[in-house]
Image 1: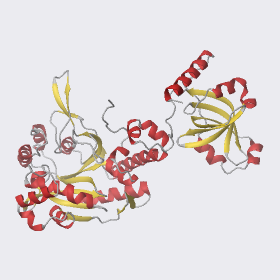
Image 2: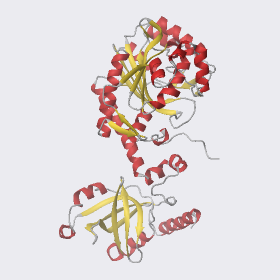
Image 3: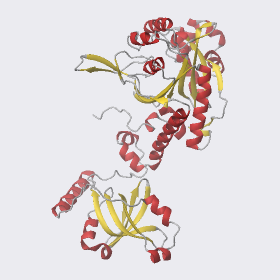
Image 4: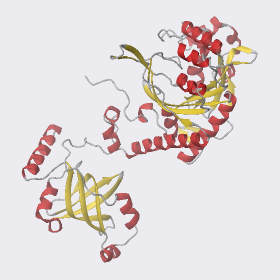
Length: 490
């Protein structure tokens, strides 16, 4: 039967129920137990003990399967991802109750009461003697909805994905556990969780294309934040010593298996630390959270064996390009020869300066080849506008990126706290920005804040979505974002 016909049948059932005074969408139902609790209590009881003690249950959930016809039948109810069999008989439920049952379809929510029992095959069940319809589903679940694989439907109608694929629910439970673990570790080390503006008059804290919006009352153009960094560092000026924010960022850039225009970051800043201390803490933080949530520091991601055992490897960007990326070392001192070599390998660096070329080469040649965690350090100064320079090496900064499983997971550095240097670096960034990034302004208010004095500090940003990809062996960022951005249907 076509879906439209099935919908029409269900609508007629709903009309019939309502004509008989049945409320198909009541306001509440007192639930006294859950499927998981029932199974925990009675799974080990035999049929004789259940008959003797006659425990009762009052629960609710969605009907996910129906079997049998005539005056008796079976169904499965699902509650919180766990299933339980229902046994329905006309002589137990009564004429009115059984008439209601005949109007129930797969997908409907019901509340019920009855005796806990086991069938001859040993299946734990509830013999229903009272039934309440809680929500009539007008649309039938899609054909072959068990194990739904169509990615278009899964991402666009996440509710069906969650309903059909229990492992997807587990992915998002793992995501929640990772976020809880990160918060707990930071809280235990004296960090304070804060919130900063998502709409900003000057965008900054990263080099990226922003989304724009407009405030009508103030007649003010604003940007959706690309990073919370400059506001979090203002808090260090104000006297907070350790702060963090779990935040949504927005970047008006491409969509891929690793990129979504709206994504989740964890950023935190610690006064009196430098990038070396921050790398040590990042190791401790991730190792602790991964082991707590996954149960081991050795995981598998997309057929790669990844070990989070400490300590993690550290390489400068030039050494990483040579040792992992295969770049001939002699080319690193010849900008145009390096450019030609990279273009031959389809790294798009035609209009980039030397520093941004190294950064692009890192992402294309090194990142995909890294399995277990590696810190890449000493980034070019021109591509790192908020990082302190390495003493004696003005062309390099105290910055690192963390790569793992072919993903960039984190970016951190020693923060510039000299307002004069920060102004110069912001001005240089505005001139030397990548060609696809729109004009950038110097954030005068941030410079003003630095002039009041900011302690030496280090900061880091973690990509939460990519971290969850690693922990759940998910190949696409869309698998770990509940509602990823998709092109609208025509």
